[in-house]
Length: 185
Length: 185
DNA sequence: GGCGACCTACCAAGTGGTAGGTAGAGTCGG
DNA sequence: CCGACTCTACCTACCACTTGGTAGGTCGCC
Image 1: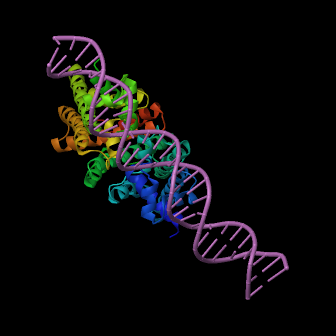
Image 2 (image 1 turned 30 degrees about the vertical axis):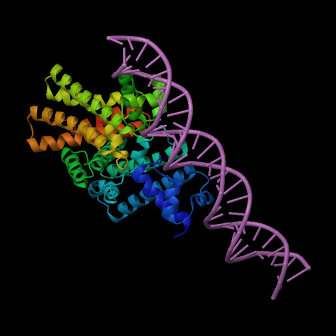
Image 3 (image 1 turned 120 degrees about the vertical axis):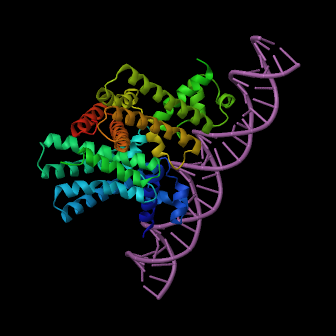
């Protein structure tokens, strides 16, 4: 793996556990095995690195969701599988989705980073809206609204589970959403 | 207002917009009108200040919810009014609930602060569970599970609305939860 | 006189970022 | 084939600034 890739990977991990402010060039460099000034050879500034991390993050999410849709055609099954994508972050050492960090760090985040992180939410909501529409039980506007609700509720479940470091809490929250009808089309 | 009170109030505001890491003694002191070293006369350390802020935060939330229950006896109306308590933070300059910051700053938060912030979630969930039980349409365990789901989903809606700085998004998310049956007993 | 509330002046650690240098791999004219 | 050149990918050494925290002093009030 090239240094650039290693930096991106390490920065992503840190961003998902400590946010933008938690990214520290000296620590990052140590993980990669270079000196901190060398990072500037690959990324002109911390903000630029964060933009690259966030962009790759949503691109990866979009690819994952597409792959899910290709493997499985039943909208109900897809909807049911959606929270699993958020579960993975918790499985990965109790990490959080970047979108949630943006909400927390909203005041301090460079605008360019905000744009990329919002793209992550957009990608998820668009996929959910399309999947809901495929189940064709609601109008396009209702699908969009419901998609946002599912996204927000799932993020909230991830948030609460992380703050208790308890992944089973995430599972029971999602189950309750399902029982209440939030995850159904 | 005493200096101690002023410090607590200012620290609470900052904590709700920039988190624990965002609390800065020099900035805080300036807002209060004293020098930063003087804060140590009232609070022995940053962690102690944060504990005091978080404790007052959940005590205040508990008092608010109690007052709501006293003014209104209909459980359905109370449930419907619950998200309003989260809406207030957004109204107050797009601020966030302290519980959400805890999830984001989980790795760096002193344990004593975590305990107090978790108490906030506990207070909310307990109130929701009791209100759901009063509507007596579900068993105690189901009430508890549903209470957690309502809390998590509401926090998620607040999170998403903040990251778009759009309070109407919060309102439509809550509406969608309602339509889906999440906010009903 | 002692105590509460506050101050000035400092320290040490951490952090983003810059200046300027170097080793090695390729490139190219003669 | 060779020396000069250039480019990449790093390095050491530094700076400016922020931040939590400490030492020790001042001042007014009971």
